[in-house]
Image (cartoon, rainbow, N blue to C red; front, side, top):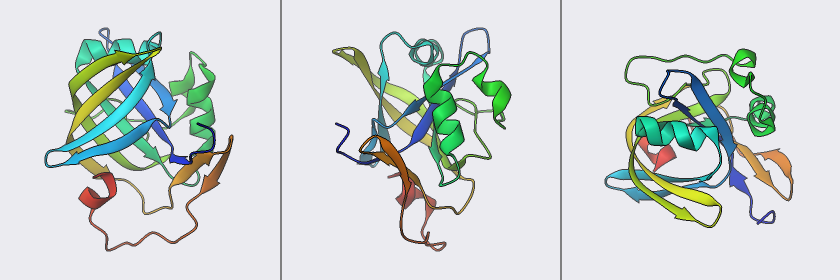
Amino acid sequence: MAGFPSGVGVVTSFAGDGSPRGMTCTSLCSVSLDPPILLVCLGTGSHTLKAVRESGSFAVNLLHAHGRPAAELFASGAPDRFDHVVWRAGAGDAGPHLTEDAHIIADCSVVGDRVVGDHAVLLGEVRAAVPVRRERPLLYGLRRFSVWPHPVDAARPVRDAVG
């Protein structure tokens, strides 16, 4: 599916011992507006998927134009990836928030989980959508990164951006 451009997110969660987990994900989309539901696909062998299943929640950090280094880091599988990014874990956060690299962060509760091939398709009800920066979104397609070509509309409601 390299020919299908997509937004770039980092899906994060907390493992049972409280340690942060996360991975780059371009297999994500909006499913429903009412209630707001996001879909993400994670590899069945990933530590991030295990953490999501343990906690029942995840955060989708939608990366902005300058978030490419974070996208590459979280795609690399480096065990110390959280040591190389700015993140926070606030009360009620579904997963670590990448506060410097995301333009919007959605905290989700798992409402569906189905294994399809070598991936799990997760449905997450958005509990909160946090605008972080008014930046153009990072995109990935044709095996390379790009940036949304148009300026961000500062007047657009955040709910519209995640739904």
